[in-house]
Image (cartoon, rainbow, N blue to C red):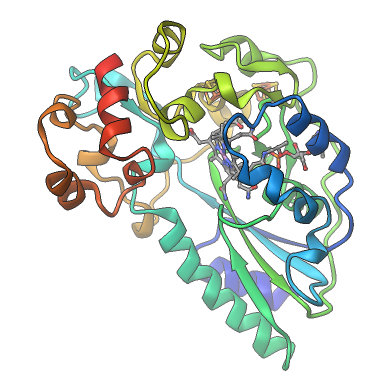
Length: 305
Ligand code: B12
Ligand code: SF4
Ligand code: SF4
């Protein structure tokens, strides 16, 4: 399987692992998380639960997953160094560059082609963030890292500031060993630093209180409590990753041209959202993740910031 990993490295993926598909060993955790209501209004997670609990059901005949990590770290969030730092409003780093669904989707298709060449007649399907794929779970099983107390997949060499991309295939690929160790130890920095105390416990995040959920997935106005929680963040949140010692020590700035940051997205002028109309919003931000909350959502978030 060295050929697949070499191809993945050449395509720009930071790390790649392979796992055979089986029943999700943490299906019970997913059930409990959902029944506790921690998914909030993300009801698609309930609808997809059966497939997340048994990823073999996602694609007919699927036997293996080739799982990739892509580093998107843009450097320490040092407001003094950032252009536009005097402006209010912060955007999580995963949104700073062109939409990762597009960039990684194309790279995964090229990786899938390499798998089909290696195993003639095999079928493949690519996923990044969309679809019923338990991505962090598969990454851990493919040996790429452990699930931290902040629920992120942490790779011991590059940290957690990564996207996960997956190619499912019916080819019979030799798997890697799962990453069994838990290298969080007694650390609780992420749990303690979360501005909204959204962690009910280690590896248990109530998304309804998470700034990422509130600024991106929540529809409608904020309550007073939610306004206080969201604070200066206008899109997503990086706090539980910024404080993690594995990122502080090992995350390296990306030099991947596909993930070059866009100043208008990384450091937007938050006043803009109050004044522009839908047509102007689409012209400026139509190809960015800001389209998920849309102009109405970004206006609401910016209003708090
Ligand atoms: C819904 C979702 C969200 C929700 C809910 C987050 C959450 N913690 O579940 C919200 C909107 C809040 C969110 C926020 C973010 N997200 Co998000 N999100 C997802 C999505 C679409 C589904 C996740 C899901 O199923 N959650 C439900 C929980 C229960 O499942 P799970 O996270 O897979 O957890 C499993 C393991 O933890 C396992 N488990 C439980 N206990 C144990 C114990 C051990 C020992 C082991 C091994 C496993 C294990 O069981 C769980 C069920 O299988 C995934 C993409 C995907 N298809 O998977 C991206 C994804 C998880 N998100 C991602 C990112 C980047 C983020 C943000 C950093 C974005 C930001 N900066 O604002 C934040 C981080 C917040 C956080 N600390 O989790 C990346 C994570 C990459 C990585 N390296 O881990 C993903 C994988 C997207 C991608 N393709 O890159 N997200
Ligand atoms: S992303 Fe922010 S709000 Fe959400 S759990 Fe992490 S620190 Fe808390
Ligand atoms: S901050 Fe500490 S507890 Fe949280 S994920 Fe990182 S190492 Fe684990």
